Length: 515
Image (cartoon, rainbow, N blue to C red; front, side, top):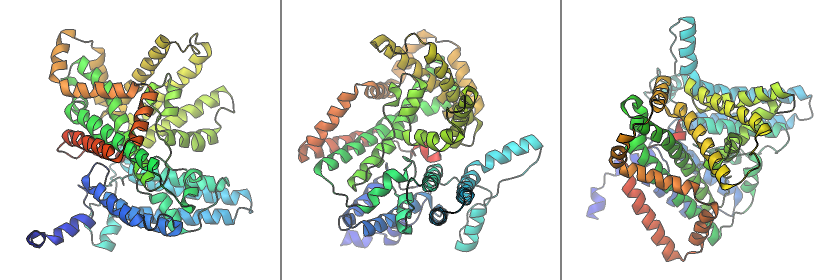
C-alpha cells in the first residue's frame, strides 16, 4: 500500500495515454509489449466474433497510431473515411460509362498522392523551385495551423513533420481503390472494418503493404490459433528482435553512423566495411520490423505476407528486387510498371517503363536527389542485366564458383548504390566513393580490425546468418516450434538477455519509419 500511495498517478496516466514524440509506441520499447499484453488479454473474448474483433482491433490500432504519431491519427482517419466512401461510390456506379469510374479513381489517387506530396515533398519541391526561379518561398504547415486553432495545440506552423508510415498506408489505400476499380475485390461495407484494414497496427507504420485480396478474407472468418501458430509467432518475434537490436542497432551506433557522418575522416578500408555493413544494417532493421509484425499478427490469428526472401542471396539485380521488400516491389509492378505498359510495347518503351518505375520507387523512399540517384542506379542495373543475360555464357551455370561470384557481384552493386541511400548528402556520398577508390593501406588493417573488434564480430555473425543455408534456418524454426514450453521460455529469456546487453542508451527508430 505504501508503494501504491507513493505513485504519481497523474504522471503515470499521462505517460500511458498521452502522445509523446520522444517515446513512440514501437516494437523495441518495453511499453509496446505491455500494451500488446493488455490487447491480448481482452482479445481472447472477441477473436472468434469477427465484427466485434474488427471493431476492437480498430480502436486498439487507432490508439497505437496516436501514441506513435500524435494528432496525425486524425489526418489518417479523415483520409480513410474518404477512401471508404469513394470505393463504395465506384462500386455503385460500376455500370455507368467507364470514364465515370476512371474519374473517381483519378480523384482518389490524386488526393492520396497530394497528402503524401504535401507532407513528404513540400520542402523538396519548394527548395528546388527556389533554386530554379531565384525565389524565397517557405513551406507552411496548414495542418499544424488548423490543429492549433481547433485543439489549442502549439505546433510549429513553419515546420512540416512527416507522419510515420505515410508512404506505406498511402500505397495501401491506392492499391485498394485500384482493386475495386478493376473489380478484383468488392468494397468493404463497414467503415469500422475498412478502418481496421488501414490501421491494423503491426504493419501500419512500416509495412508490409497489405493487398486487399490477401487480407480482407481474414476479416470475416474465425481465426483459430494452434500451438504451432504460437511457436511460429514467437520465433518470428525473437528473430526480429535479434536482427533489429543485436545486429542492426549495435553496428549502427558503434561503427556505421560514425563513418557515414564523416567518410573523409576514415580510411578506404573503413569506408568499404561501412558500405557493406550498411547493407547488413538496413536488411536486419527492415526485415527485423516485418518479422516482428508477422509474429505479432500471427499471435492474433492474422497472416501477413512475407516481405523478404533472403535478398542478399540474389544472383542478379532482377532477382534481388523479387526478394527485397516484396510487397513494395509487387505494388510497383502491378500498379505502376504494368499500367505504364510493362514489356508489351517494344524495347524502348519497356526500358523507359522499367527506368521510370525505379526512379519513382527511389523518390518514394525520400524527398532527396540521393534517393532518385539510388533508384536510377538500380534501374541501370536492371537494364544492364536485361541485356547481359541475352549474351551471358554462364546464365544457366549453377556451379558453386559461378553462384558465389554472381552473389558477390550483385551484393557489391546493391551495397554501392546504398551509399546514396544512406549518406546524409550528395557530398557525403561522393566523399565515401572517393575514399573507397583511393586504395586500401593494408598496413592499417590489423589495427582497424582490433579497434572495432566487437562491431566487426557482430557483422560477421550477421553475414554468416544471412548466407547460411536456408534449410538450417528452417530446421532452427522447426526445433523451436517443437520445443517443450519450459525450453521455449528458457530460449526467450536468453534472447531477452542478449538483446538487453546490446540496447543502446539512445533510442534507435526503425530506418523505414522515415519513409
